[in-house]
Structures are given as C-alpha cells and as structure tokens.
Length: 119
Image 1 (tube, one colour):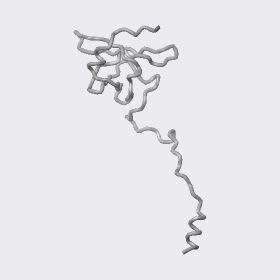
Image 2: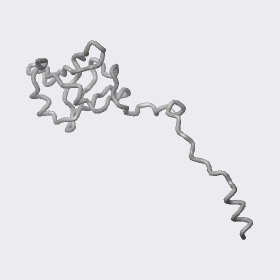
Image 3: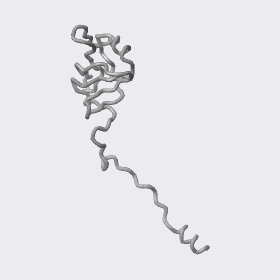
Image 4: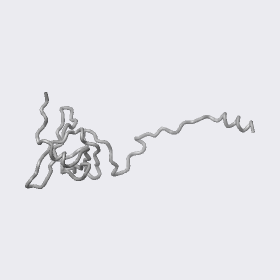
C-alpha cells in the first residue's frame, strides 16, 4: 500500500490547460461587448423594457470612439431624436443588428435632442 502511495505522490501535478480565446471563436450570433466600431446606422435600439427605436447617427470623438447615439424614436408624425450617451450601451448584437441600452424606454425617450455642453 505504501508503494502505491509513493508512486502516486511522485506523479507530476499539472494545471488545467489555459484557454486560448483565439483558438475557440464565439458561436455565430453570440452577443459580445461593444467596441468602437460596432454600432451601425439602422441598428435597433432595445431598452430594458423593449424596443426604443433605430440608430439614426453615431457621434464619435476625434479618436473615433463613439460618445453618443442619436436614436429615431416614435412614429413618423411624432418622431423624436434623443441623444443617448455611449455609457448607456451595454451590448451590441451583430447577428441581429441590435444595441442593448441600460434604461427604460420612457426615460430614454425623454432625453434631450441636443448634445450636452462641454465646460
């Protein structure tokens, strides 16, 4: 019995293999975190409680990083264009062309249609 224990303790201990993210790409349609070039004009914008509207324009800083989204909200007769800060964007779903934002439709629909002033 002690000889078997000695043989087992002499076995090298190996760690679990490190997962290489580039070796295993995401499955098609997987939602991924947003990056600077993800959002496109025409993408659907979804609030926490449902569909808000479509991306009308992506406003970018000098470094090409998005700062705000202009979203077309409402019917053609009562259309508004609230400016949604990029910080509200949670995820971008490329397969379904959807942008998920962190807020409710009513609150997002009441956002101003102008950019905030910079001091």
